[in-house]
Length: 233
Image (cartoon, rainbow, N blue to C red; front, top):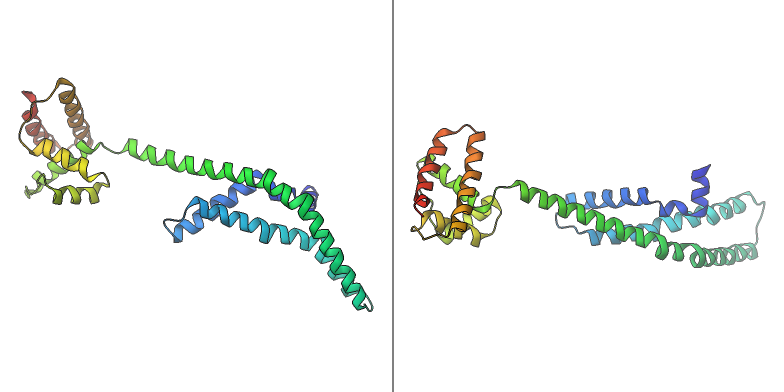
């Protein structure tokens, strides 16, 4: 009974939970097919559903269905009756548009939709930041790759744009930062401040923790050999 009343009064169109589920489902559906599908596009889809699905369905059931049943049950009807029904439909729709559909859209539907969109974007950003925090720092990534390069016997890692670009594609981090760290670890020894030395030591510890979890002692030895380059700073 409550759902029927909600439908008749059109309150169902402004239900926060339903609107949230619709937004998330629409975003997930289109993003699975179009990777760069934006939340603004989903917003337009949800707005389109309001006008072309919810509004028309509500009006259809509220006026169109009774009018159709009336015509079907009438023994005979004249053209004048159709004209009257058409005018009544026009007046009813205009009244609903003026007092229900438009006010509800601008005062309830649209504000809630904007809030839901912002919450969705904030959650995506928080998830991205969480992933970034969980990822090793750029220097530690370079150190880890350096160790694997040594262990493989390849010994091909160099501090140039080519390798910086390759590692950028592998780790998904800034190419300039990758090259800067390659120069730091593979280039000539530099005089470092206490602060810089402490920062580098922390990055070695970060990489070392990775190999400790793998129980990879040989890797830790290679890290230790490279770290000696910075001990006498």
